[in-house]
Length: 248
Image 1 (tube, one colour):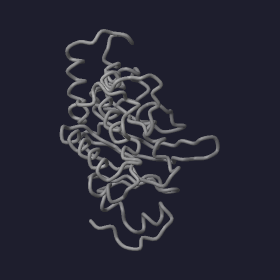
Image 2 (spheres, helix red, strand yellow):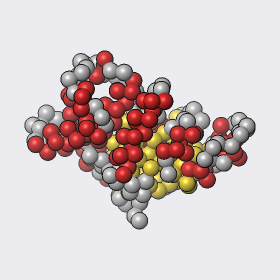
Image 3 (cartoon, one colour):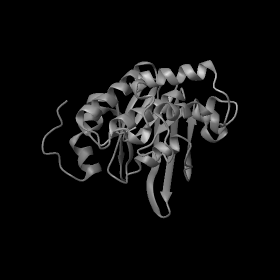
């Protein structure tokens, strides 16, 4: 199967501090990947590079065999969506208005008129993310779990082939985490490729078929999640011994 996204020999540094060195991996259509690593290892940086928001010092990222920098920004936004950790909204947007912004790459101009297809895409995105009942609520008044689902709905409204998420369950209780993972599973089953940065290794094992571990000095370790999360790899990446094996 031809990769939908290919990362080749990627290196990135903030000044003199290298965070990615010769990182390479391929993402297949419909794959569900947990991106793991210690704080500061480069997970957020890698996601931003894959979304075309950062440019690496060396290496390349290809979407459907074509380098990201050869796509126009709206074209890329229709293909790859990034859900960041935090979104700061300064206006009192309703959930409906917030999710509608996901259609911007599909409009003829910044203030282009919504078509029936756009309204349908927004409605389907809100239903998929289970936020349709929040349509008239103000985004800034929502709970953490509700905001996460609304952010995902905005990304779904872009109708991307690839969804990148930066710690989508951060600060959420176990019930709200389950809601987020259920949304991601539905999207993945529809054929969307998903890469999510996660900290909880048991969640990675339970909800992601592929694991990708950023290892200092050893680049990326990729493979089936249970095979990636070995006691040796966990000790190498996180600097702590595994007292007991993670239950599979």
